[in-house]
Image (cartoon, rainbow, N blue to C red; front, side):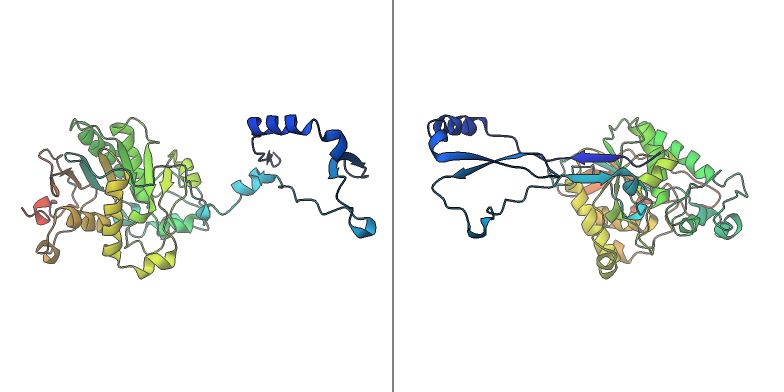
Length: 349
């Protein structure tokens, strides 16, 4: 199918009151002060010009320069579709401005994303991807991998979930749903594993997997590169999202301290989004967020165990600070779980 051309012409609305007054005032002087001139052009239609009789015409027989009209804007749909998808950002979320301070009693569930292919199968990419072609070698591998703008090689940096991880995400989602807390929004870090986990959770807790907001400033600082999956690419995973707060530049993110950046962005997000939130992030961001909300100076020096996939902590806003909610969901333990997660490693009264 050929390219579609959309013609958008912006014309200001006329001021009816002013135009009516001007027409009434000009009716008496129209015959004496205004002379109509018609200029014919071989390439254009006839245009109507008005000139004041009291003004003399410039020398040389040339008419005074005309004011340049605003040119209409053209958008080529084909160019948009074929453009570099990594540079495309969906800015449909208009709630990026600060709204209100967090109210006492609101809940935030912080969830570590489910197990990714890199965690379950460290060598999967070299064995499953050959010349930009993917072949699953295990029933726990994804059945297929959609092509991304930078090819299948990008999955080595930004891996998907395993098949069992997707099922485990549904189990955690049902547990969050059974807490009787009305979850208003699911926010995800931009890594593919976080987005897939958030999609599974949102489908159960909010009833709509499209009810996902990707906040790119929550990216895990161990990620290394900012080559995140785009909204157009996520549509191939049957996931529709809203993207907000993209990093200003890769250089700005690299110059900032990783933990300092995450803590500052999360504090901003507390004020930006209303209601009870479910936030899905990577392990390093999970650790930094918990340290920020319920930790203290002593817990900063504590050596904490590795945060297992789908670790979840529900926090409640107190009068002065955040605290652990009185009803937590049960942990999800696998054979790879060495030490179960204990929120007390962060929490200090």
